[in-house]
Length: 121
Image (cartoon, rainbow, N blue to C red; front, side, top):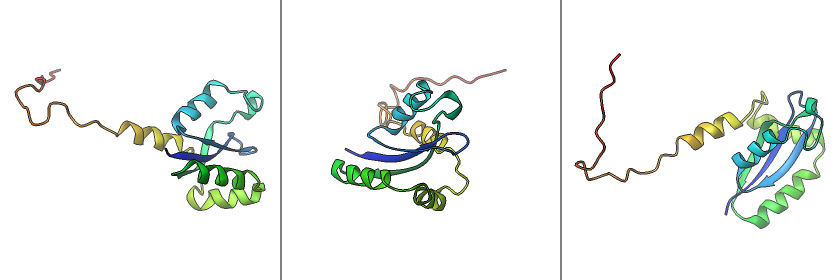
């Protein structure tokens, strides 16, 4: 099972929080639903600025421990090459997850496919 090590920050980039999870979108949704989980509402952690996808739990735990001990300049040095403008990467993840389309159940059987109607205005 894949694991993610991520860094999330607030809108002013004052706080950098390192975390590890199996479902990144679900974790980010949790942060959005619990705005004062770690800090007050002015410092709400809501911007995903860095993440790594790791294949094994052991490697992910080691990487999480390593990144957690980094100083702020070290974390910034990790973030800047992949996300120089510190944009929220959640938007790209949401788009990517919506693009995963299941194969059609009706593939190869055109007589069963639902009819498409032309839309007129």
